[in-house]
Image 1 (cartoon, rainbow, N blue to C red):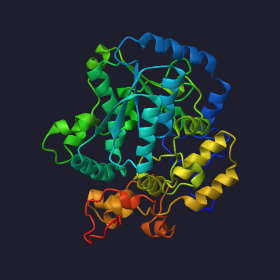
Image 2 (image 1 turned 90 degrees about the horizontal axis):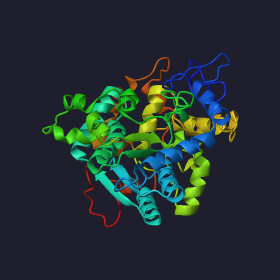
Image 3 (image 1 turned 90 degrees about the vertical axis):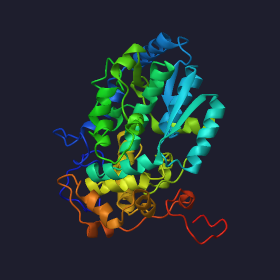
Image 4 (image 1 turned 60 degrees about the horizontal axis):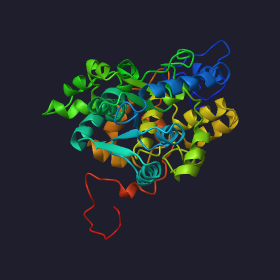
Length: 401
């Protein structure tokens, strides 16, 4: 790469640096995530895993109003999960969608088409925007990550629905072992990765519970934070819940899965800020994805292009050299959507960089001036359609501003 961060150690196989969460390198300089993917390809008996999946499904099939719940963002992974369970496994699924507030037009179009093609019942929940604004700012200050409401809501709200509707089986998408080492494929060789409160508190909620957050933000009614809290264990145990990753039972292959949902469901990709066009299937569900990736770059010295290139490198679809070129071209540019985000949380650029820079992960270090030298990205086609806190007062018909 350009040598921008010579003080960082990188995996000798992929492009992930030492600032990646849970990373470790072996004697050959290969990271633990790369080794996990090798283990996935060579050590797991996927035929027996598929038998275990069928056995799990049959424990619940036809026993309740729905066979399972599928938490659904509309991105590639949740769409594939829903497609597989409905079309391949013939399950009656209840789709549960937590609307984080930033769903883009193409995503909404995909969702409508998917639900109609598959014939599913859907519960879509949109949380209180005024509370979301406060949560975004507080988590940005404390963690350099404004997505606390999204992290927690996506993983907690479907569990509340499971209790309320008495649907004990919940299927998520890819396991964490695909990208981090909070859990590994070796750890779950004989069992699935349970998506439970232990996992939720280990990394999903950034170490901040809903009760914690209630004491951090100005909230008049603590009930507003219920969607971000995990249900009581006794209530989950009462329904006999199992909350697992589909990717613990079938080998996760993003590109093959995208090809299938595009062909069978008409699922469409979309341009995402700071991401090459060839990865237009990645993170299309959030208008603020460019901001989140930019914050990651400021904190850790790498972003989504390194992540995506590394996935392809591990699966033999991209050379390291080609990945380095993509990283050099795309990472670190200031998103055009930054003014929109600042409007949402009510701060200026100086405050934004102050909060972001104080969360840099050692030994990575860049100043704001150095970051600004990396340039700015292009505006997405639909940015003018996004909600604005301060609408334009020009009264131009159809201008979108």
